[in-house]
Amino acid sequence: MSLVGKEFPNVTLKAMDYLGDDKEINVLDVCKKENKKVLLFWYPKDFTYVCPTELFAFQEMVEEFGNRNCLVLGASCDTNEVHFAWLSTPKEEGGIEGVEYPILSDTWRKLAGELNITDLADNVSYRATYLLDESGVCFHESVNDMPIGRNVKEYLRILDAKIFNEKNGEVCPANWEEGKRAMAESREGVINYSQGK
Image: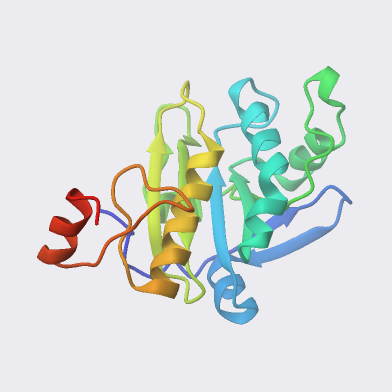
């Protein structure tokens, strides 16, 4: 079942950051108590192949997400200790040194199980991505199979569309990007948009 339009599960997990600080993070609390949007992305395993390319891609865009009042969080079913080992390993040795956002540790598959994103054969999560608003309600979710990496810029585009809609009330048509025309959410709006008005 889709989580879109629903509140994110109220689950607290351990997390690790690049400084080696053990944390506990409840994504729903981050949204509500810190009044932030959240991008939470899951990946299968630390010390693998596609995964580090994604973690670096999110790190490269973390400031852009921050400029939109959106916190980036990673997550997998590895332990905090494994997270810290990977965060401390240089890139040229297969590590993710330089990644600064927190990474959640769902070793008991509690949250991954609630989200139904666990690959039961390998007991790891798929590449699932969630965008949540400040009230903790999901406005985007997607799930990729293991071999398929994400396009991080697409999540920024979706976030921009959400912010635009919140501010202006207009809806964003196919392939909309910041600076492009939107349209009124009505039959007349569709007609005007299709006629270039």
